[in-house]
Amino acid sequence: MTQDGRAEELEPAKRRIMEATYRALQKHGYGNLTIQHIADEFENSKTLLYYHYDGKDELLVDFLDYVLTQFLNSLPRGDRTPKEELETLVDTLLPETLSEEAYRLQLSMFELRVNAPHDEGCREEYRHVDAELTELLRDILVRGVEAGEFDVNDPEAEAELFLSILTGTRARRLTVFKPDESIEPLRAAIQSHIDRISA
Amino acid sequence: MTQDGRAEELEPAKRRIMEATYRALQKHGYGNLTIQHIADEFENSKTLLYYHYDGKDELLVDFLDYVLTQFLNSLPRGDRTPKEELETLVDTLLPETLSEEAYRLQLSMFELRVNAPHDEGCREEYRHVDAELTELLRDILVRGVEAGEFDVNDPEAEAELFLSILTGTRARRLTVFKPDESIEPLRAAIQSHIDRISA
Image 1 (cartoon, rainbow over the protein chains, first blue to last red):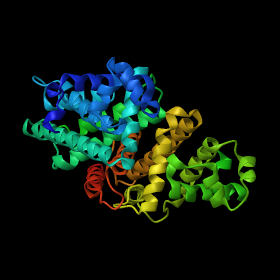
Image 2 (image 1 turned 120 degrees about the vertical axis):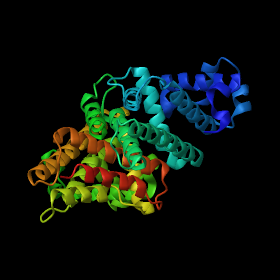
Image 3 (image 1 turned 90 degrees about the horizontal axis):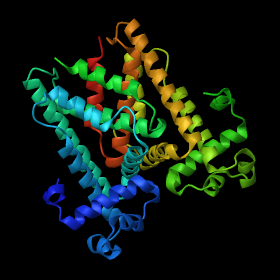
C-alpha cells in the first residue's frame, strides 16, 4: 500500500470522490458505471473529478486501494485471539446472506477484478490486494502457531490456500447464489477447515 | 446434466456449432464475441445458427454444458487411485502455465460466469456446473476414504471446500497472473492440502 493510499491521509476532496464512487457502484453496478454517475453522487462538479482523474479506469484503481485500506482498517484488533481474527475475517468477507446493496457492491468489485486482465493498472492493483491479504493471513497464522492455537507447518502455503478458499467462495456466492440466499454449506466447509488447522 | 447435453449424443450440426464457439472464444474472448464470429468459424450459414439458437446468450448456456461434459469425459479413469484422480483434476483445471489460447478460453469461461448474475439461464447452468463438480469431488473423496487413502470425516464439506479452492485459485490465476507465469506457489498450497487430507 502506498502511503497516500491510506484513507486517513487522503485529501478531503479525494475521499469524497471515493465515497461517491462507492455509492455509484452500489446503485449502478460496475457494468453500467459512468463518470457522470460518480459526479452525480459527488455533489460537486465533474470538472473537479477530471482534475483528479483522467478517466474511469484510473479512478477505479484508486478506489480499489481505498476499499482495501478501509477493509484492513475495519478489522477488529485488540483482545481477539488469532483464531477469532481469522473467523472474523471470514465473517466480514463472507456474511451468510447479503443485502441487495452489499451484493451489488461486492459483484462490482468482482467484475472489476475480472476486467483486470484487460487493464494493466487494475491487474497490478489486484495483485497488490492479493499480496496484502496473503500477508495478513500469514501474520494471523504465524501468531496463532506461536500462541499454540494453530498447528500448521508452512504458514506461507496455508495463507495462499486460505486466500484461494476465500476468493473461490466469494466467486461462487456472487455468481450462483442469490443475495438473500444462505451460503451456509460453503461457510461450514471453511469452518471445518479452520477447526482442522487448529491445534 | 440433461441427456441431450451429452457431447456424444449431440446432433452433428449442434456439435459443429459448439466447436465453432470454442474456436471463436479462443480468438475473440467473451467480451468481443458476436454471433457472426461463431458463424465465421462454423463454415455454415448464419441461418443454421439461428435455426438452433435465438441468440448468443442461449448458445453460450448450451456451450457451457458442452464444455462441462467434455471436461468430465476427458478425465482419465481406470487404473488410477482416488488420490491420483484428485491430483489429475487439479492438473487439468490448473496447469502451472497456460498458452495464450488456453488462457483466453479459460478467461472467457470465467467472464461468462461473472455475467451469470445478469442472466438467469447462465446462472442456473453455472449452479449446475458447480453441483456436478462438487458431486465428482465428493465421489473421489468417498472412494478414497474407502480405499484408506483419505482421512476425512465429512466428504460433503470437503468437496465444497475443494471446489472453493479450485475456483479461487483459477480466479486468482486468471485475474493477476500472466498466462506464461507459473502459479507454482498456489499449486504447492493445494498439494499440501491434498497431502494433509491423505491417510
